[in-house]
Structure formats: structure tokens, C-alpha cells
Image (tube, rainbow, N blue to C red; front, side, top):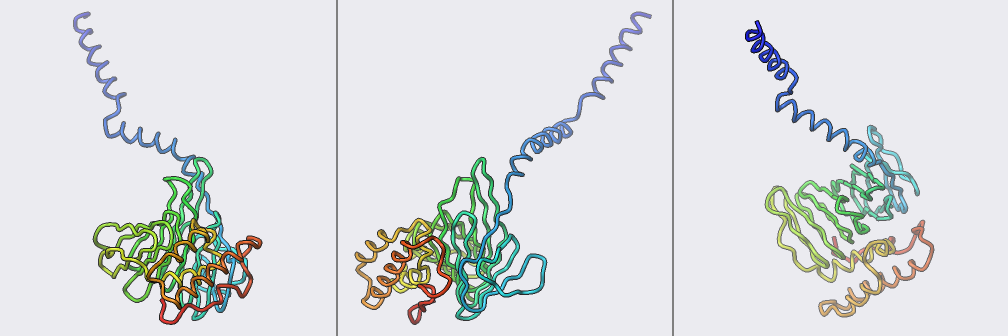
Length: 293
């Protein structure tokens, strides 16, 4: 009986061990669940933030997330993830984000605020928006960390902003990116990502790749300076640095030089006042030079 029961006991132990030992796929799933449960609280620290309209000129409207109705925009209106902002002809809007970065709309433009989130520890912020049409100027503060992201999507391209002053112009089947300060990575539906540096620009056609960056013209620079006005002081661009660059630019024609000097002087003057943007008038009412985007 002993010799018979011995093997029987061993077989029973083996069957018990097989039943209690999880299979490899089950073990992998269990490990993944444990990792997700540990990562859950960290991911939960990302919380939605708000933005506000800090300047409104002309007909500007807001469509709240989940609504089909457009309502008139008012100064200091709160904006939330999922909201849409539109501006009609000769209208302008300035949006101040949670970190102080500024996004401006001009003329017939449509912007969708897809995501605005932030966490404290470790410091990180994620902002994504869609420029569906028109002109968008961004004065974005330097990203808080490598985990922070600021992206602008258009019908033909995706741009990753890294703390900069830039302009995106969406018209028809093309997107133009102008970078006044800092750098922006942009990619089209085809081809590799292209890095656009200071005072450079590129275009991205629908279904194509981002073209090789080229130097911005003096007229393009003048337009962005005049349009940006006081907002430019928020980004990494300083008035003194911009003045030195323009003073040394050999390609600057007389008319553009006057316009740029006026825009820079206005930015310096407003920078000495309180931080709140003007409620009316000021550089945002100055029309762009003829023939500019």
C-alpha cells in the first residue's frame, strides 16, 4: 500500500500544483493589472484646466461642448476642453491659457480646444487644439517638462510646439507655419517630421509632406509683430532681442521697418503696464500691412 500510495500522492500533488500555478498568459495579464493599478493614481493627477477670453473685437462666438448653439463671446468668458471659438471677418479673439500662454484668432477662423490638462507632481501639462480654418497666433511658454505636450492640428498637418511664438495659417488645402521665436515640429500626412526654427516658415499641402523650411520675409515678420502686440511679451521672445534682430536685418525694406518698429515700441509700452490685456484699442486694432496673410 505504501508503494502504491506513494506515487498516487505524488500525482495528486502534481495535479494540485498544476491547478494552482497560473498559465503564462494569465500571469502576464495579472502583472499588467498590477502595473495599471499602480499607475492609476499618477494618471489621475492630470486635471482639466480652464482658459479665458482676454480680448474680443468684432463678432466672436463660442460653441460649448455638446451643444449645437453658438453664443456671443464676452470678455473674460471661461473656456473649457471641447469648446469651439470662431471669429468672423475683421474680428479678433485672444485666449489666455492656464499657464499664461496666449493664443489669438484673427478674421474668419475656427479653433477647437480639444484638451487642456495639468498635473503638479511631476509638473506636466498637455494642451491640444485644432485650427480648422483661418489665422492662429500662439505665444506659448516653455514646456514644464519632457512629459508636457502642446499640439496644434490642422486639416493637413500636426504641429508640436516647444515653447515659442508662432503663427498658423489655414486656407483651403494648405497649412502655413511661421515661427518667430523658438522651434516647432510639424508633419503632414506623408513624409517625416520637419523642425522649423526661428524666423523660418514652411507649408504643408493636403495629403503631402511638410516642405523644407525657408526664411520668413520681412513682411511676414512685421505682420506677426503687429498682430501679436502685447501678447508677444508672454512667450520666450523679449522686446530687446527682437529690436536687435530687426535693426540688423539687411533685407528689411523701409516700409516694413517702420511697421516693425511701431509694433515693437507698442509691445514695450504695454509691457510696462499691468498684466491684463487691453479691453479695446491698442496694437490688436492695427490692421496688417496690405498683401499679408
